[in-house]
Image (cartoon, rainbow over all chains, first blue to last red; front, side, top):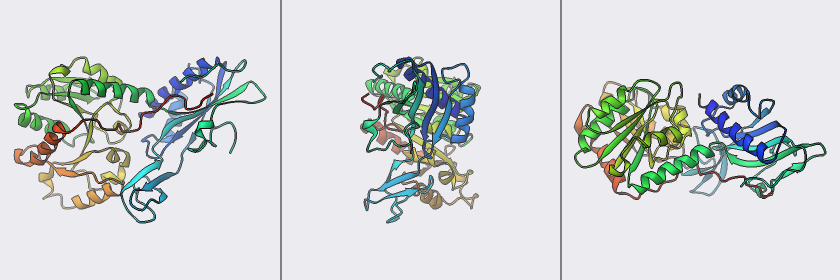
Length: 123
Length: 260
């Protein structure tokens, strides 16, 4: 159940952003969970319900985007969609492919309730 | 498509992301940040420690019972006169495995994770303080037996070795693609049982790995029989003499990407 560890990392990141923007509350949090990230969106959503208690994200909703897997073929140069255990080129069938999209685990956006314009962001 | 949830961010416009203030006091901060960035940063820190001391670090992963500890015992017996070896052991409970390693005459640190299903860079970093890194050539990190969670956490290792046990079935790479995609080497362990496990076809296992876009070598071991370790030991010695720098599991994330 490493989804709970991932949620704690997520809330740490959100807390940093909320603090830097002097936000009163955190609304919607949007993340991207690739099918090759090793994280299960449904389990992550359930873990979030536990992990958010007592944090700045206690009232936050979690939106999870699961992008389609896209591979680039190093042989023929085509890009095509793929399945997690079949990452072959749809064009030439080659296996020398590189995953362009689908292995990410990213925080995309945080909706904040702020009293005024936020200060300069973190870098 | 909307202006609030980040669904409009693509590789082409990510540089334009920033603070979007709507009419109310609700503000959406758009970021593209790797959720495991904190782990990845510490993993990189661990890797720098290893590199500074010239230590090759190998993350050994498999399901429980595939023979990780037995492979390590046999490896230590074969190499301990030529290389200085240590082991970090990850298990939910007990220090049985560390005791088995210490019995081979090399240092071992046991991490008991309680209920956690994987090691992370923080746990490994803490364990490094109990190891004489300056006097080592080779460090094995024996991860918690699990084909799921350990694949997501970079520890700072130079190589990932995944054991596929002959008793497990040749379709494991298809069932656990994230784990097997991370492998630099797949070790088909307990290969001496292949003679009686007729439904395990090593060619099918190799094909399942290929389907993951990987040409990862599969080598066979039988740790109870010393001669069946030759290919594995040769691979290790090759890694020990090769340049170390290797990419982590995922590219390290930057900070906030937006120039807000």
